[in-house]
Image 1 (cartoon, rainbow, N blue to C red):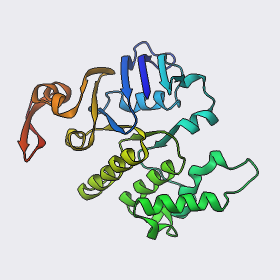
Image 2: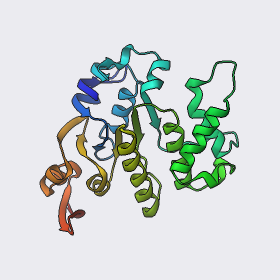
Image 3: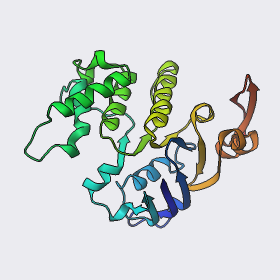
Image 4: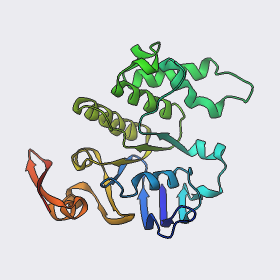
Amino acid sequence: MLQVINLYFRHSGEKEDLLRDVNIQAREGEVTVLLGPNGAGKSTLYKCISGLWRDYRGEVRVQDKPVDALSAEKRSKFFSVVPQGQDLSFPYTVREVVVMGRAQYVGVFSTPNREDYDKAEEILELLGIQHLQHKVYLKISGGERQLTLLARALVQEAPVLILDEPTTHLDFKNQISIMRHIKRITLERKLVTLMTLHDPNLASFFADKVFALKRGTILWAGIPNEVLTETNLSELYEIDIKVINHNNLRIIIPGEVK
């Protein structure tokens, strides 16, 4: 389990908290979504949880261990992180980018061994992108890059997977594709998966639990069928929201701007 307990955060020198009294629980085998508009504090919270920013008040615990007490090396054994895309300055191949996720298993003066490359190839096959392994990362599509970054995170073999807006800049097909991969692998590998999202429809289709974040505060939380209501979503996004039920799916559409 991953727990966020009474968490507050502000940047040094700032007078106002960006996060206020945030409480979250994420469990293994489940996709937990942080949902909210731009500026809600989702990326700030993701950085606090993953240990990138550590000067918060409150607690972040993984497997009942306080994250701020863990070294960077130990955090890498608990957390794998998929950022919002990543531009690399060197023309690495897809295979080389994925093998970078094995860094914690490779000695300081060593290079990846056969086992590291075997695990990378296993993950590439799992995600259906093994045919890309010798292509240059900078020359593949946005969807293929995002799958490559997901592969790099998975080859790390950490129990907690954190994704910051994994569908950003992707077309509709690739959004659905990567979310299906994440959902399936979370179940198969019993990962604790936590992701930030803008789109309530993706949360409705793929999340096991949703936490709504607005102006640094959790407004509401629960399973999608119970909390993704017209009232809750209208409050979160400050527009009129309509929820349509069709063939056991909840489809969320916008109405008038308030």
